[in-house]
Image (cartoon, rainbow, N blue to C red; front, side, top):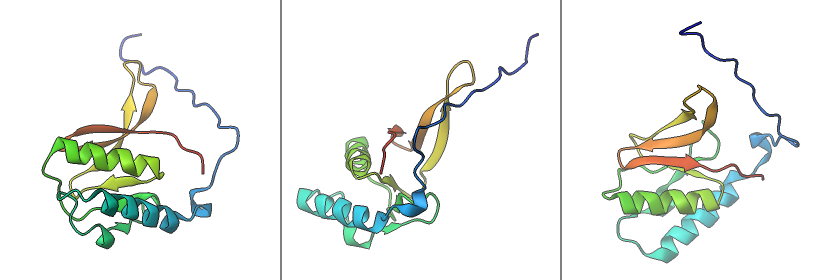
Length: 121
């Protein structure tokens, strides 16, 4: 029948991790230290970046980055530390396959879409 959504099946993860059990402040400190060490002028005052409440591993960057390259670098380093850097107009969204099956999660930014990798711990 046309227009009927297919049934969606989610895979169970072998050992779910409760995000509340992870100390994101340590991850944030390591992330900020790496950003400061890079010395990239486009990353202004990283020591003022803070963790958001939702999701727990999102980092609030209080300004928009000027280039796609700087936004991509920030995302890559954040992912390395298990964090999701978020500029003011960014949002997190599900990425769906053409069959309406969840294919991943991404940050939607004015500089493009940045996939969020699955990490453990």
